[in-house]
Image 1 (cartoon, rainbow, N blue to C red):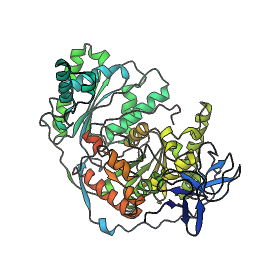
Image 2 (cartoon, rainbow, N blue to C red):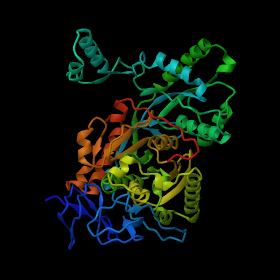
Image 3 (cartoon, rainbow, N blue to C red):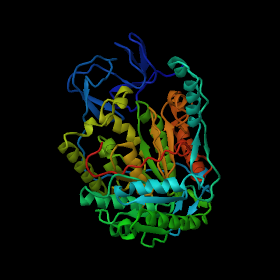
Image 4 (spheres, helix red, strand yellow):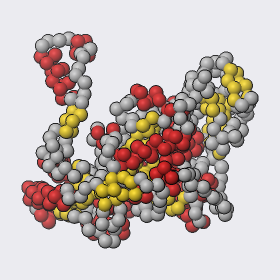
Amino acid sequence: MKQKVLKIHPDDSVLVALTDLQAGETVEWQGLTLTLKEAIQAKHKLAIRDFEPGDAVTMYGVLVGKMKHAIPAGGLLTTFNVQHATNSYDLAASNYTWTPPSVERWENRTFKGYHRSDGSVGTGNYWLVIPLVFCENRNIQVLEEALVHDLGYARRHAYQHQTHELMALVQAGHTIEEVLQADLQQAVTEHARPKLFPNVDGVKFLAHEGGCGGTRQDAQALCGMLAGYITNSNVAGATVLSLGCQNAQVAILQEEIQKRSPQFDKPLYILEQQKIGTEESLISQALRQTFAGLMQANAFTRQPAPLSKLTLGLECGGSDGFSGISANPALGHASDLLIAMGGKVILAEFPELCGVEQELCDRSVDTATATRFRELMNTYAQRAQEAGSGFDMNPSPGNIRDGLITDAMKSAGAAKKGGNSPVVAVLDYPELVTKPGLNLLCTPGNDVESTTAEVASGATVVVFTTGLGTPTGNPITPVIKVSSNTALARRMPDIIDLNTGTVIDGEETIEQAGERILEYIIRVASGEEEVAAVRHGQNDFIPWKRGVSL
């Protein structure tokens, strides 16, 4: 019989409902018997004991809230009776030790990637077309219209056929009801034509709304982020369009590229509209140079590389009450396996590390690393409060509906993506990851902003866990979607790549699910699997302006 409830940590004061529970139903956990006072949906939490106002609520062994109102044992925790709360933390000396998991099974494994001159290896081979300022977005669109279809990178969808079917119904005089009930042809996705450059995975156009009009710090950060994309191992080269008078100057971009790649030798074509003159001259020159770059990029082919050359970004979005007990810890185990083999891993989303700061400080390799983490967390929290917000406002309506009722509760589960390995470095946006091991990167919790930032810091594969479902992708890095529950995997199979609801269903251990994730990462990195986000052309790209974004 399927287990009804789960106590995540021995010190926890709540149980997680693994299935829908009815009022009056009796549940048992390790000798404890509770009679439920009300119906409790799967993913939500019930009290192990009677709670009084001010009592601490613990999950994952840490404080995740305090009671606002009394509830009896077996009662449901809600936003009405619980408020966000976390413990303070310090930088006391830690004797943290980590025993890496066995990686004998992967000892001689490789993936097939694109080797760059700096020693890095990409999982993709893309050409970028980038505006330095939003004023160039129209020219970027013109280039996209001129290049994507004829070069064979456009994907044709059957929705156009559905439009034609509906047009025929209207023209034939059918009623509104008949149109609403029409049985339309199933949508399919296919490439419009063969690729001219078969070894180039795509030409990607990174339109954005920045580059001028904000602060100079915004321009510097934008140039750093764009430099991170240009120097990412998944990129062969880039065409950059500049207006000329904006804050995000070409010199700043070049400086940021040199910071990340002192021996930078990828083809890079920079065009400044105010110097060149007419749109036709700009576009014609950009087309010639882009074709020259694509010819160079097409010379690269996939070659074997050790798994230590992978840089893995960890992301979660549309999280639910199961994310922290299935998908996230399974991804954490995959992270530990990759780190044990010398790979780099990025854990971001600082608002979703609120409440687990002490653990991450204790896991830091030295006091300087822990100190930087504390400083960045404190600064971020202060800016959020100054804007009239705060980390406590982070859970979304979807999070709350599916059992994550405080930010600390959400964070304690989200941090499980980082496994148990030591924290080797703490980076501020948009710094480059250079050290093998677990790196903390300061980003917002916003899915697309954070994923965009992880790729700018060097991620060549991103694994994105979700409990509610989200199509988020990235222009140059494959984003693998992992569902926390089987119902989601069945409901949205078009966007989910892997299901770890098997852990909740009792069919698989966290370790087994983590090993399965790692095997899938290797296939994706080798170009053997096309993830749903790539298949759908989900090219989400949002630079983070260093204001407050939760």
